[in-house]
Image (cartoon, rainbow, N blue to C red):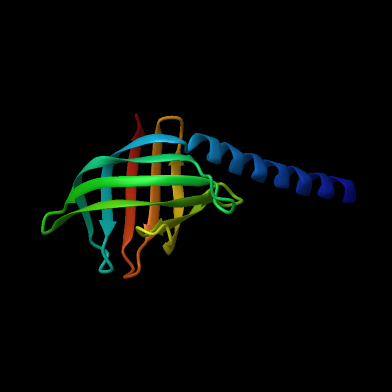
Length: 144
């Protein structure tokens, strides 16, 4: 019984490492944004019309695995805007979450958000994070 338990723990650890490596490999590329949903702190969901893309590639930084650039325009029913940012990404151990840093023009980290990877296939990526005012943001991408 003790040997079976040790074997199960080892298998769990190995499968977690494999999932992180698989996620790190699959996330590279150019992703076109297809949808942007925001759940307001009141619980109301709003959807934006969006255009733009995110590029993810291997980072040259010794502490961060990936680098990204994100550019998209959005229009919700009552407001619109654009996002143009770059930063660094670390996929976390489970492969289900990643830390996403935002860099300023001097390449200094100004913010780190934890994103949940809801979907990641060879063609689809869906990310979710809660912003500083408690709104849940969900982005859906398609690989170009």
